[in-house]
Image 1 (cartoon, rainbow, N blue to C red):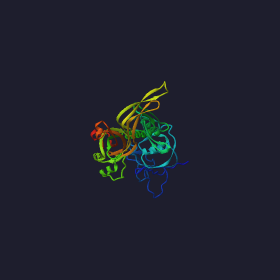
Image 2 (image 1 turned 45 degrees about the vertical axis):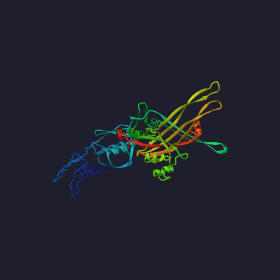
Image 3 (image 1 turned 90 degrees about the vertical axis):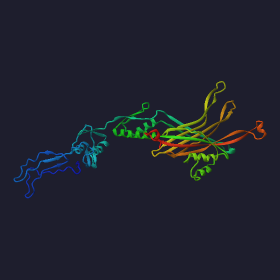
Image 4 (image 1 turned 90 degrees about the horizontal axis):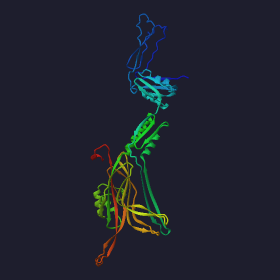
Length: 465
């Protein structure tokens, strides 16, 4: 089998001109023998000249000159062009690559394989990478010696700066509606979320490892021990860094909860509110309506009824982590289980008031997606079962919505309605004798939510953008 190889070495390439064999007769009229010169760089090495005696009356031939590149950087060596059409042993190819360079190559006995391909105008490092890495081999440069060996695994320790906690949230919204003579029906909307960033990162690292790689995660130390080849370890490091940049993003959530006691009707007339704010009707939905001026919105709501601010919480939340804001009280009811004679009571907490759960997702361009779940629970009384057990009666208003806002923008969320009975002294002579008049009062909650991305590495006064 014959191997054809062409090795071009750029402008200062390899040029060989063979002189006529010793003793070969010259043709009359031809010029005298020229010296042989091999040009390969900027240095010079002398090679003994031909021993052929110079013809009478002619100058002696010059010695063969070998100019070498004294650079010790694989990236600054001259461009190489290599074309091999038939399989060539890798060991022979490596010797060919370093020919005419200041580098020597040393290989371990397990370096084997063949190469077929074409490389055009590449550096020595690029050529070694293209030949060795796909064949499971690697190299190291020690001065002017290039050591070639079978790839071996290495171990690195990667910091995982995450909290060792597992958080789970579950939100369930159930509604009952009468269907007429046929009975009644119900609908259930449930959303749940659970997060364990260590498990997610560990699974992500495993997908990047080779068949020889392995990973161990120490949750307490916040450290991952990764063993694999060098290029795989570099990829793992880049992946963990990207996860840190995204998971550790923060957003400041400022909520303002306003209660509006409606004068006329059962709810706020949002068409009138939009007109007062200069928003065209039908251009935005009520849930997630952008608010440029919160003070102007409150002034517009004041035309609908009595406005009262009942809460203004402010929290910081990490990317994709739930932030919970609660305002109210927690009552206790007792659940009775078991048969007569062996019945046990169990305390069941009942939360009353407003609970606001927000999960933000922060993109790299400052756009924030918010999963907002407000819940308004009010205890209105109690009921008694046939066995004598007492259970609380609750008035519940819940919502679950997803919003997309820009950094620093404010949106309004409404629709949480509440109805209660208010007793007033009766008018006329009846009021003088303690008579009361009951009136139905309709209220609606409006939540103003502002999301501001927190920029790390800046002073506290300039930390938001």
